[in-house]
Amino acid sequence: MGKYRICVIPGDGIGPEVTNATLLVLKKIQELSPSFEAEVEVAYAGDCCLKEYGEPLPRETLKKILSSDATLKGPVGESAADVIVRLRRELDLYANVRPFKTYPGVNSVAGFADFVIVRENTEGLYKGFEFTLKGELAVTLRVITRKCCKRIARFAFELARKRRKKVTAVHKANVMRATCGLFARVCRETAREYGDVTYEEMYVDACAMERIRKPRRFDVIVTTNMFGDILSDEAAQVVGRLGIAASGNIGDKYAIFEPVHGAAPDIAGKGIANPLAMILSLKMMLEWFDERRLANLLEKAVILTLKEDRVLTPDLGGNAKTVEVARAVCRRLGLLAKRQN
Image (cartoon, rainbow, N blue to C red; front, side):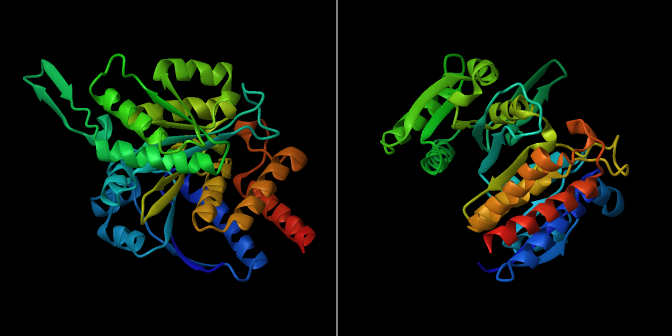
């Protein structure tokens, strides 16, 4: 255990609400584990900054992120591309990691699912190389490099070794023979370095269908940027709701953890937003710190809150407030810690 400096960005819409709820949980973890110290520094980004300062990602915020051990970020609004997409590139957060799991108490189309999507985070169609010709032709360049394919493939295989040792590479090389072809070839080459990991390939449309039909067949899915983005939203619905979908943007030096969902301005200020996606993003941050005991404790507390306490926000069929969910998780953390002691 150690001392960590965490940059916290509340974001827009429901962001400040789910952020405050998550900070209650972080405070409880510190109370239960004195050897775990977290120094929190709040920074701002998103539509609120654009309106007040004329830019969505102020220099001071970037400075705080760079001086922190990790960042916990709430959702931002219309300026998301100017915040998180920019941060992914500038900090070289090449792996977007999104775990999807069925939890008790959450209705899902899957009887059981527990898989992770590892998405290349820095290139592809989201690189933003676009242009138009006289309003008659629009072109987007899909940039795929061997370097980025190799490191995301290795990331996926290393993760699979910690899980159930299976990797599914998802692409569309039968149509996009150059770009997806390169991605597929590099994944195959990498698979030969990991003889202990089962490897398969699947076209993206077939994967989208199979994940609904038979989600338990998947362990770690590795894919390109836009395919991973689309498959992730589908996966969130397969296991229940976006309200429980966490994610991490991870590089060799920096990491930013955030809920998959957006700022949801239609329910902002009502106190009914589901904070679990951000709380589970905190769990991912603890894993990145290698605080695995605390991460496991937090996930157990979430499971018991859903399964036994049934403290559910409206999106999960209940009527609990955001802060009530956070307090329920804190209560469960306390009870679990007592049992361990």
